[in-house]
Every structure is written in structure tokens, then in C-alpha cells.
Amino acid sequence: MKSLQLIIFLLFITHLSYSQNLETQVDDYLTTIYKSEQPGATVLISKKGEPLYRKSFGIADLELGVTMKPDHVFELGSITKQFTAVSILMLEEQGKLSLQDEITKYIPDYPTHGHKITIHHLLNHTSGIKSYTGMESFRTKARIDMTPTEIIDYFKNEPMDFDPGERFLYNNSGYIILGHIIEVISGESYADFVEKNIFDKLAMKNSYYGSMKTIIPNRATGYSNRDGYVNADYLSLTLPYAAGSLMSNIDDLLIWQNAIKDNKLISQASKEKATNGSELNDGTHIPYGYGWGENNINGSPTYQHGGGIFGFSTMAVYLPEEDVYVAVLTNCDCESPTGVATKIAAMAIGKPFPDKKDAITLSEDKLKRWTGAYAFKDGTIRFITFEDGSLKSQREGSTKFPLYAMSDDQFIFEEGTISYRFGMKKDGTKMVSMVNSGEEIIGVETDRKAPVPKVEVQLDEETLNAYIGKYELNPNFLITVRVQDGKIFAQATGQAEFQMFAEAEHKFFLKAVPAEMIFQKGADGLVTSMTLHQGGQEIPAKKIE
Image (cartoon, rainbow, N blue to C red; front, side, top):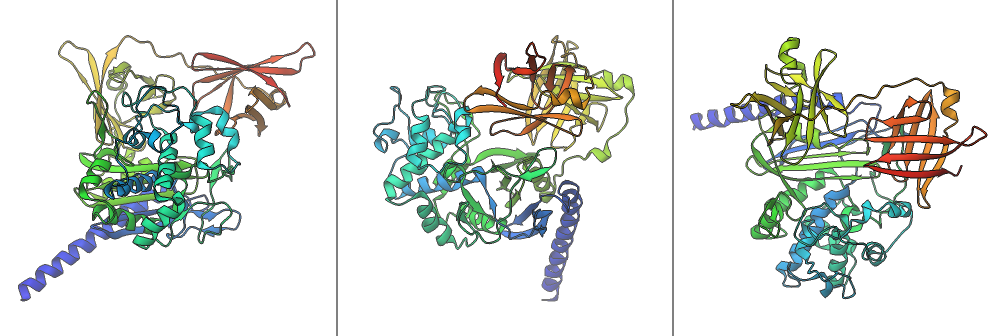
């Protein structure tokens, strides 16, 4: 008996030591990400269904100075899709639908252009239907309440992107239709169905169908970062609907994950369909099932989903082999917490990513050995250059990121979740293995030349002020230009704001995305228009204000 008590005591001490060590690691990391005076996050790590780590960081309401608490409620964004997918699978198990049902069974007048579009295609983003959130004209509707059928009417006559089942393309329209199908079958609203069959059944008392009018206890306020924090743009939560309108907190998300793990809502067979990816028509495996995507963290499989919506970014990851769940909810849409969730999940399973603080110094010759252009199987070209004493990586058409040396041939990006390992083929050709959260892709040296860096010129504020105004690309899509503290910024309708950099007095470029803006003046010297150069297109925009 004493031996048994000793073993139990030692196990307890080991668990306590593990928990304390993990808490220290995660605290040290998260306090560098979420500052005490800025919008913040709530973070949960659980193991075997029980919380190991439950903390909050930053501010829930900047105007009122409300400190973030773990029980604050956030807009989930696309994590909503898990709830929609499970609702569909519940109805399938009840015999009320088949995943192979054509959508015209529930929306008889839907124009399928002669194609067979099924519920399965909607669930795994292979329908080919145009995603309404990618339509520029829809961005002007953000403040307007719409019914599900009104949203469907908005996109249903758009040309299809591809034939059903031929490709994977993330698509919010598909989940709008799924929500409508739930309503047709159940005879109740999507909000009522989810509340009755999921929230109430699981006692998720901090979860809601989102609303800007309803009082939501412990609601965190959402922000954007536009050269300083601002209140997020207003969005009617009728619009994300079954693709992104649910709200919850980290405690309820753990209840949700435990219910999925323990098959409380759907069977093991249905869960496997949802979490194990799916296939295209030709048998190609895609890492998206029904409401969850497959991934792995340093060799440990995961199923996960994130969300992004005006003012909020979210991520939830489950590692079935270790029975570890990580949820990170943030009240700013400035940056996805996917990398944060991935890093702390790796810590929780004892497979931490390398840290840039452990980087080593290499000679210039050793660094320059790996410079060049590398072509990857997905068609991406990445340029490795030597600048200011270190290597930089630049994906074609994107910006440069510094690399940190961990050995002579291994380098990491700042977050540590993406790494490069360089090497040589037998014929002397350079190659690189790029690992992103455990997924490997190979790049081979090519003769593509790196883009010539643009040379920035400084313009005085008086010159910049001439470009302030609104420029109309079409009646529903404007670019607003403003100047602050000697810097010039541009913001397209419904999009984030970016700083512009002068290449000449009338010519500017963006660093965040590959785009140029060239301004034109009239005979009187006043600015009359602007031309946007992006993606091989030249789009004129008249100055209207």
C-alpha cells in the first residue's frame, strides 16, 4: 500500500512539474505577443479533456479600460463552420438528408449550370460556387441585415469557379447554403437549431448566435490596427450566418471539443468523415473534411480550424494522439493567432519549435552559399538573398522576411514554425526542404532572377497631402487615401489599410502586397485620378472627393 501511495505521489509531482514548466514556457512566449495595454487574447490548453492552462492577456475594451478575462466572449468567425458541419451530420444520422443530396432538392430554383452540386461539395469547399465574401460588390453590404435567401440570391447567378469536385477552394457561400438547408429540413432558424441541439444540449452557457443588438454578457470589443488601434468596422452578423456568426469563449470551446471527441453529438464514423480530409473527383486527397482541416505539428497529426471576422481572429487545434486541445481567441483582426496556437501546442506535447534567440552566427561565405531562386512543386518561387549580414526569404510577389540560422544548413523564420533546410543534389544543384508546421515541400534551384528592390524616395507632407481623397474604381469600390505624421496610407472598401511608399513624386508602391498606384494631375496641377496596378491589371480610378 505504501509503495502504491509513493507511486501515486510521484506521478502527481511529475504532473505538477510538467504543468508548472509548461505554464512558464507559455507565459514567457505569450507576454511577448499580447501586450498589457493592447487588444489581447484568451488562451486555453487542455489535456485529456481537462484544462492545463487558462489565461487572458491584454485589454477587452480599450475605451473603458477593461482588462481581458478568460471568460470573455468573442466572435468566432469561421470556427462556426464546425457547428454547421456537425448540424448537417446530425441530420444525416437522423435520416433527414444524405450528403449526396443535390442542393436543388432544398433550393429547387438554384442555377447549377447543368452540374450536380451536392451537400458534400458544400461541406468540403469543392462546389465551385462563387464565394460571396470574395465579390468586391458585396463588401458594400457590410452594414445591411440580409436573410439567408437574400444572400444566396446575391451570389447564385455568378459564374462557377470550376466544376464540382474538381478543385478545393475555400468558400463561404457553401456554408450559407448549408445553413439554409438546415432551416428547410428542421423548420426552424439556423440560430435556434444550433442553440437547441448543441448549445443547450451541451450546457454551453457562454455561446450565442452573434448579434450587434443583443446584450451579450462578457462580450469583448473588436479592433483593427490601422497605424494605431481603431474600433472594427460594423458588420451585420446576419451576413456571415452559418459560415461565421457564432460567438463563444474558451471554456465553452473545450466543452465543444470534448463532445466531439466523446461522440456526444455525432458518431465516430461521422467524426472521421469530418476530420480526416476528403477527396477530389480524381481521388486526390485534400486536407479539408467537413468543418475541420488536417495538419500536423512536428509529426503529430491535428485537426483544426481558425476564423477571421471584423475585429476578431481565432484558432482552435486538437491533437488526437496526445489528447491536447488549444484554443486562442483574440479581439483584433490584425493578425491570425494560428502561429501562436501552433507554437504553444508544440510546447504542450513536448515538441517545441526552435526559437530565434537560439540562432547562431555564420560567416558571409556560409550564408551566401544558399542564395538563389528555388522553384517549388506548387509553382511558387522563393528567392533567398543576402542582405545586411543575413539571409532573407521572399516569395515571388510578396515581401522579404529574415531567416535565422540554427546550423550551417538549417534556418527558421521569426516565429519558428516555418523552417528551411538547404542541401545539394548529386549533380550539384541546390535544393531546400521547407517545413511549415510539420508539412514538408521541396524546392529546387532555378535560374529565375530575384526582383530588383524598389528604391524609396522621401516626399514632404505638402506633396503627400495633394493625394488625399477618395478614388472610385467602381460605384461600390473606393480607395481612400490619407496622410498622417508624414506617411501616406491607402484603404480599399472593406479591406485593411496599408502604408504606401514613394518611388517617384506621383508613383507609389505597397510592401504588404504587390501593387502600385500612379496618380495623374490635370492642367491646373490638381490630382484628378489614380491607376492601380495589381495582378497584371491596370484599373483606373477617378478622384471623387
